[in-house]
Figure 1: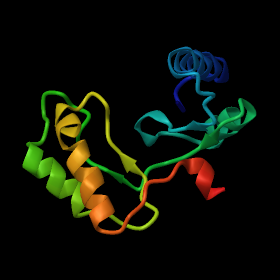
Figure 2: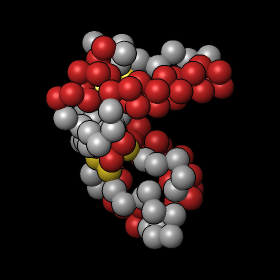
Figure 3: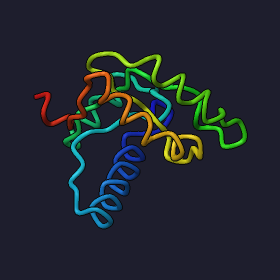
Figure 4: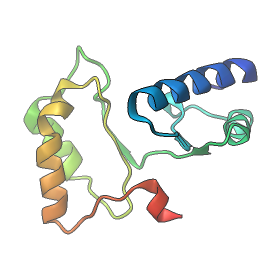
Length: 122
């Protein structure tokens, strides 16, 4: 986002907002900067558009469809990094993530973790 203008940020964010609303009838209130790249200007612009910027506290190399970790590697990486207050970033284009998500959720719950929406942390 730092490499594009405020006008482009607004256009892209509002286009995403509209697509999410049309598909899920959900009004977005939070935004995660692509690749985690931001600066004061982009944070300010997103805030002006009504969004709170939220970052993740765990991510792993799952975005490259040509370099997917194995199912066992993915499970191990995510589960070994569980921590209180964690926000896990899992990319939706990852075939591995779709295979391990159920296991990750069950294991997190087995370890006593709960899943909450960001709204519950206000």
